[in-house]
Length: 394
Image 1 (cartoon, rainbow, N blue to C red):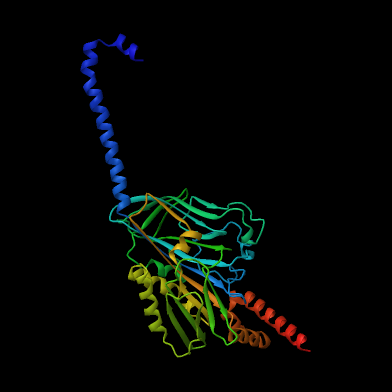
Image 2: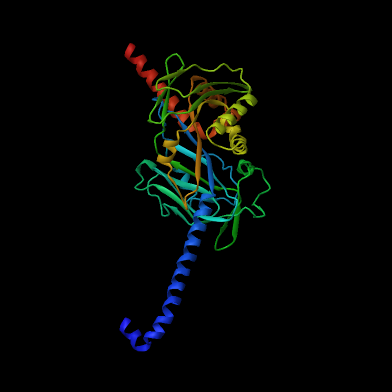
């Protein structure tokens, strides 16, 4: 090629063209460097905050029991997309119902990122806006998530972060808990699809997993709760909460040690005070005040409903392990705050359910609706143990 150019061009011509060739090449490199610098600047301006809930129920041994967490009515708008097999997914058996994680983005200028979330031993069941890829995408042959051959994941390839977006988000006539998550100062998002453009204040997704929890909570013979850590990461805070009708009680434990024993709370608590304390704790973990408020507003009717449960701040290391999050270009900061909810089948809960069944008290049974299956299983196991113990004494 070089010899051919020599034949076509004289030495003088080559000499005159060389500076222009070099200048053009340097200009191209300079423009490319500006584009790269601009992308890096855009990425460095982006901050990401996420919150969500891991809901489980403790078995008699204190660890998360397997149950069918997708029973009960949906609380989501119809525009939210679902797993392709809506009838089959109701039979999925796992240990964790991952509820309403939302990813907020903050940026002073337009930026575009890709987002991928994986879920260990799990599947993604609901999401919005439209995702480019959700796996597994085929037919699930086994309802037991513990036997999944690969982790579930979801990918949004082109998420446009648009601070100047008008913010016309979809909304339906009926009221859903979904909308409370929009009450923040996060930057609006825009995603193009093959049918229509979609706008939202966050990326939303839910799922089910058979992963273990970072702790266990087992009742002692005297009714106290023994809490053990199953992970190396420290749990920032826990609340033992109980509600019976209009009466509520709770106990806080900050940075609990392994083997912590918690007394049952007296039912003389104040919910408004608890809401404020929970919001403050979420802010301490890194959420903005409006995000913490949105999270409590979204879930306070279920976190603090009838029954007994352990509510705890999930360690960040555990979140990153079972729910890895990848964002490209990488933001300046990623904050992830999850609340764990571990339902406890106390004697009071078991008695309430047994009495409601005997009297056909549908209103009471409705309060425990989605946990009825594992509650009844625990009651059955306790009856079998009691019967066996009685026989052995004879």
